[in-house]
Image (cartoon, rainbow, N blue to C red; front, top):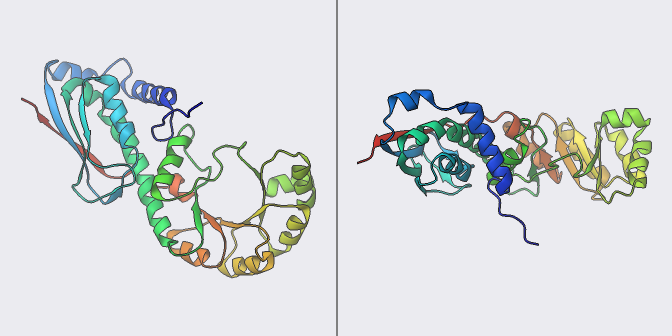
Length: 287
């Protein structure tokens, strides 16, 4: 059976549900202002353009909002997700009935600005580790309900997705260790469960590394370690398992971290703290 096509990571049913939910949240029973101020026969043409340098993500989602309210709208996508766009660069041309176009505008822009903001920030982090052997990862620090599309934007920006959900992998953290009694007990229990999933263990001291590896950890997450400590961790592990660095990673520190020899570096900021991109929609009456 073939996989369903996706838009920003959403299959057709998920896409329709998302668009309907967002439009319902914004419109309620309808766009009253537009209905009373704009003639039903009025037609607009519009250009959606970047107002700052961006990495575009979510353009087809924006398209879906306009098409949901006006299936006959004429839309031309001028760039693709993942493309870099400069100030003033047109991203999309739209022509159609003015009322549904104005009603869909805010939902389309909010979504596009948010995802493009994530992709734009992610690209800066990805470029900062370019030329190293370290892979940029995202995290589960996403807005509830938006994880799929936010992680899509992170991929567009150049990150690799870590766990999408809690059932994607086993990550034993400090609270799990505290409840189990020790790293050894936590890892042994996870391995004994025979889930077929990789068992990753969070360590925040060098002393925790050998017990974790001896118990069977498949991967380590070194949490909030300085670059100096990360270099020691890499030497201590000696390539036996992959190492991920995490915790407080910023743009000005990520390359130094990547150069310690870790295999991965995860950054919550790219989804949690990315500012919305400045993208505008300018209208003109159509003849």
